[in-house]
Amino acid sequence: MNTRSRLAAMRRAGVLPEQAATPPNPACVIVADQRCEHALVDRELNRRLYDYEERVRGRFTAIVDTLKTLSDCRHKLDFVEKAQQIAMDRLGYELPGHLLDDAWVSGLNIRALHAWCTFQSFKNTVDQAHVDQKPLCERSLLDAGFVLSCGYHTLDISPCADGRLQGLVPFVFRMAPNDAVYVKAYAGALFDIEADVVDWTHRELNRLTGGISGGEDANYLKIAVYHFSTSNPNHEGCAAHGSNDRVAMESALERLHELRAAIENTFGLGAAPETLLIGVDTDIDAIRVHLPDGNGDISPHRYVESFRIYQETLAMNAADARAHIDRSVAEAEHAEGWARGAGGIAPGMRRFILHLLEANLSQIEYVIQHHAGRYQVIGHNERFICVGEAMTELQLRNKFYFAHLDTVEEGANDMDVGIRIFTGLNIRHGLGVPVLVHFHYSSHVPGARERAILRCRRVKAAVEARYSQLHENQQLFCQMAISDLHGSERCTFVEDEVDRVGH
Image (cartoon, rainbow, N blue to C red; front, side):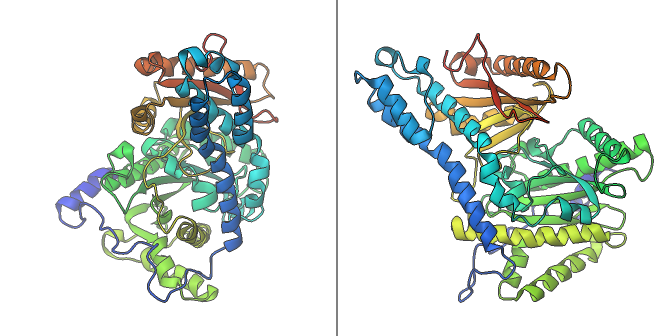
């Protein structure tokens, strides 16, 4: 009996409720006379993250007001020159001349300009990432060294493609971007089993051949991340699962079980990677960590929630707060009934979970301090869709919706979810859907760059064919880009001679 069948049987028996109860007071509600200054919160890192957030968001928030200004002055004799000066002053780059030259006759193509500015602002963010993210990397709690000390040479994280999880690594998990952390997002956290087996095989081969420093005795950790909304659970949960939190959790857990079974069936008993299931309340960025037992098995009922830990430890000193986190994990670990597991958590996994819970306390306080305790926009507010392969240069909540794919056919579900989201965000307000098609190549492999460009063109053509009505109505704008895995080329735009943005 698979996970979903077991859980369904438990609900029919009346042991498991249909929907987990919403906590009466979220983490952002502080009891009277309590100060929002937790002993375990890294306020310096919070300050650096806020600077990063403000700097990156500023590159996008100026777009709409700039275009409104241009629309008001398009009949002036020196419009093109004035428009370029306004764009440089407010956005930091000039606009394509072909979108400005005939504005006095046919009007400004605001949709095309909006898409083009979105892509260019993203490109600028990529170019500045080494400067923007350096302060975060110098301060983050969970770096590659810590991950290896827990016994893991690789963290393979598959969150939902929802834009609210785009800041998962640096913000929610407080991890520094590094070569040991891989993130591939899928709608509903429904990662591709076959592709993950290939990824695991590649990393294991690197480890066995000495390609991973210090990884000789380390393991591979696969993390699936689902999400939910405590403020509006029936509408602002996971779109891929109809905002059904239970289905989102069960589906992610089932994928983890399937991955372990696939690897053990192929490579033998004991070969499977360790797995971890984490839920994120995207209203407040608190996490729910489902604890594996001694066999590595995960129960949907055996978990620890960081928002409760934050509330319970707010008045404690650092030592007492850490002891409380340890007790909370131990109590959940040894729970009886349906949550009961077989044996204790492995030491390395326990250490990783304890630090993950502690690190997330800083993010909870970050949301309290900088977002009034709960994000003002608890739903979608992404700027564009990225399809193909993601980059680590932009890791910030609600900046883009990501669909990991090699072909549009295999990523059809993810793309359809993204288009539905942007129908509400952009199309209903007269704007188009910006879609960035991005793939990596290796400059170590002859001809790889040219093949990456051909791959971009195939996916771009397939996207435009799948959503042909949007494309024909100037409501879908695709931009292609490539990046070198081993060189300095990052997010280089590939111009299509046949179809430039706006033509």
